[in-house]
Image 1 (spheres, helix red, strand yellow):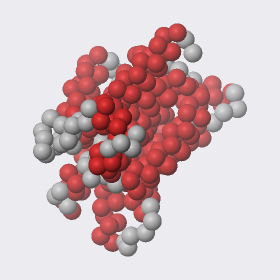
Image 2 (spheres, rainbow, N blue to C red):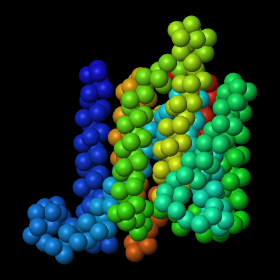
Image 3 (cartoon, helix red, strand yellow):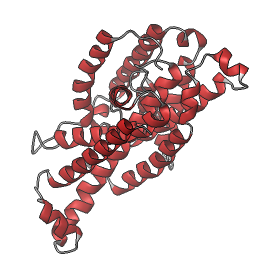
Image 4 (cartoon, rainbow, N blue to C red):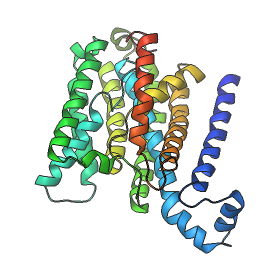
Length: 318
């Protein structure tokens, strides 16, 4: 790891710590640092109840979801050789969200059913987008992905007008939901870090990989399974939170270089900090109501996407 990478890692860890403390402090009830210390030290049980039952699960959920979405975006960009590739843009999350809604009408509930439906819906979309024709045309890949995303979002609104608003928020999240995210998120992000060298392999052409005894198809599909797993985990619990997987990897690439063994863990930390900051902002700027994190990310992500298109062409990312 280079000196520059070490500096950025230390900086993002510091920013993450500040974001966590700030998120625990602010809200409908303000807690000072001394009050936080007193609460977690067992000296203020009433404040501790508020922190443990309301704020801490929300903070942890925001952190895990931010990391999951950022890593999913990073891996999908490597798999598709496209810096705009992201589960929310490609229709993966909207397809999973729609299948969750549709199955809720038709199939009785069972444990982890939403995760399964989100995985199936997102997986089918990525299988379709992995066709050779779309992989060879970056513009067509993104256009088809956006059309699919808008289509499934439209179907979801048709079936349930308020479904998106109800699911794409951290408000009211419970410890059971947070624990599910922690378990599945930890497994998925650990797997992504382990296979991050495979993302570097895809910088080579399929012919070069074949000459080394490696299958580009197997590597790409393996990476996409992790992408669907991570995206499905967030979608099944929180809903669709767009643009995290586009913004974070592109920023990370500029800060720590283009080695995915460095980009993936850095994106995980940066994504956690970004989504936690956005959620904290959303629940404090409009008290006593709040602005969903998905809404703020849309406002931020739209101009960022336009800026990316303005600065670059949709060629292969390294």
